Length: 403
Image 1 (cartoon, rainbow, N blue to C red):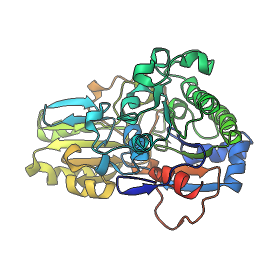
Image 2: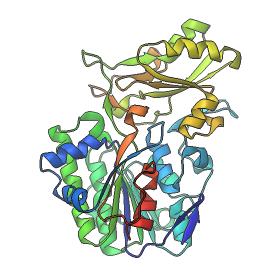
Image 3: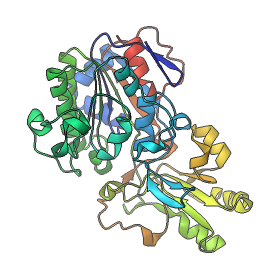
């Protein structure tokens, strides 16, 4: 038994795999199952545990992956976006460095307890955070050609998996994660395996599209192998995904920095988009969650004006946003703005190069992308189904209820 961030976890009796399927709106699974593309998942839904849970808001990759591996919200672990404004240095930075972490991970705790642990993530931006202070295997498919025993706990990954290095803008980046997971389970049989994919396909294709079904059929084949190898498997997601378009299929964007500059004058506010990362083809740094740094004396007036805008779902002051979304108050600005289901938030028109964006835009970040699947291949005994279930309960269910 280990205790991490106030939660107790049993040590696994059989290999345990937790999978974060990036951008997995529940309807992707429903449509693929309905069209007979996921026979393994269909069986799990009937014979295992089929739930829908809430992810963390902002519904972005970094905060949710870190919530899953810490079993706690961002108010505990500190990772509140992919990107933030560092008030101490006055700079905007990616939250890829483990220095931003404020809590230990369950993965590191399990390794310290003598369990063999392996992590495979699609994008390298997550690797150092997920593997922080963890003894074991930890690598990304993005940089699978650069793995070393010293840094990643393994070498020869391309030969082991039997796939070429995938493009970061491809479904193959995620398939490499699944293939690596199956190979690790076959050859080294880790006690705990965490797999995290990328949402390239979900940013491009809606549930039920042929390309989306093809992706989930591929995933289903690997789920079948993990199941056949005797693992307890839990599948969840970091966030859902929705179309963010106008009637003419152009991006439905509210440019907050332009608006605030018009209202208050240039240089009086700073808008931060926590979705920001290097993968601009996915989303063009446009998501449905933004924070604003502003003179506190002007905050109330701006909050009132923003709430009146068509397309804005929520506008909250710092303390209210931190309480509602379980966020670290010192890292989210003075105002939090959340767009409606079909709206994304930008800074200024001039700062968003949408030339590489593959339209129509599909993105995430808001409350409308909070519902995600939480599915296990085993029945869960003794679980209180009336409690609010979160994606970061995945390890709790897999280790404490499904063994």
